[in-house]
Length: 256
Ligand SMILES: NC(=O)c1ccc[n+]([C@@H]2O[C@H](COP(=O)([O-])OP(=O)(O)OC[C@H]3O[C@@H](n4cnc5c(N)ncnc54)[C@H](O)[C@@H]3O)[C@@H](O)[C@H]2O)c1
Image (cartoon, rainbow, N blue to C red):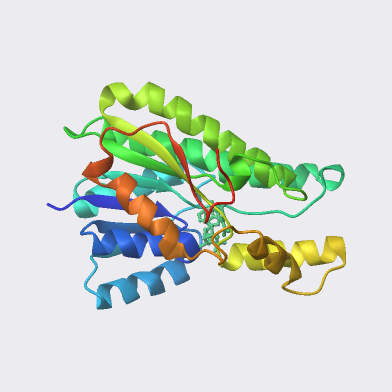
């Protein structure tokens, strides 16, 4: 049986790019997403391209749903070799304006979701002879905080910390835990961030996005495929001696 990768939030954006790349690398793909209609459309597209894939409805902020996703993956494909805690949400708000509801919502998805995904994946991987790999979506905002992205940055700093502690605790079971830190990627998330910044700063539509892109040393915005190439490496046996790392893939914006 081939190796199996679960990607949360894999219906679109970076997660979809990662799922497609790992599918082409030979993994069987399980896409878990709250948006099941879109996840099913993505799986249909993948199947047409000869990628063996399954869509499962899952809200990452619900612990039982994360365990159910892993069970469905094992029932269908026999194992979970790679689990990608990719699903995440954004919020544009000055620290002084963050509401308790928004704070709870973003921590529920970005932080609690990563904890629950790690728990579900680790439980399964500990039963497997060859362990597994857990890969978390961090961000350049998990290394240096961004103005108006206070709550978001705080969640990504948390994911950075969780990556390190999970790596230390799970190494004894041959489970490696690493993270990818993208920069400015043209997805639905950045459309929403641009919208929020336009509102806060009185900018024109697209101006906040352009301001960020103009500051990228490699002088272009990033694609999901750019991120997927790093994740492909982290998921492969070439990365068997790597754990606990949060790696920037951002065109040179962040250098630590
Ligand atoms: N876009 C960027 O520039 C950028 C940069 C750095 C890090 N990231 C991180 O990469 C990851 C993916 O970002 P993206 O830009 O592709 O986002 P996106 O908004 O384009 O896609 C996110 C996907 O996650 C799903 N999702 C949202 N909440 C969910 C939940 N509770 N349970 C299950 N699925 C859920 C959505 O339905 C969607 O399919 C996120 O963790 C994000 O923080 C993105």
